[in-house]
Image (cartoon, rainbow, N blue to C red):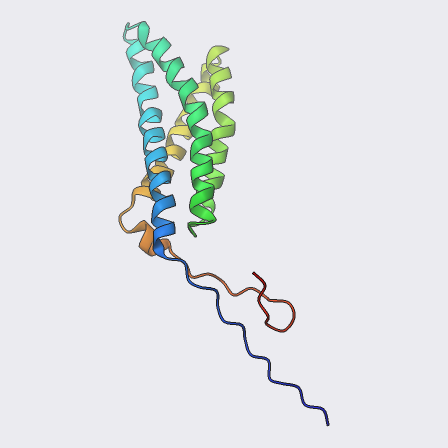
Length: 161
């Protein structure tokens, strides 16, 4: 009878420190916080325009252009917080939806299609603020850290590096 050596489970990979999570989370916190403040400024600027402060309309447009670029930085920060930082992936989807919808929002504003512009604006403000609130919750890095998962290793447990 042939006996085979017992398969020894591979040693788990070295655990990542919470420092990677905290570092990528701070990037997401700063960018999403700036985005949330700018998103909240948009209805204020539009309201000032409606009150007769006509230069506020150009500021509203300038902040909208700034938000289009900043939204993609928030997407990149959310990806970094997810993959190396080991945080959940749902902020990526919300940030990407904002990044894709902001040019549509800008186009609707320039076309004076205010019914779509206002409703989409409310959704964008809610989504951006939701990501910022989630990122800034106290203890986020500590509560979101998850240990690395054991992956199947080929060749009976020999790990390749």
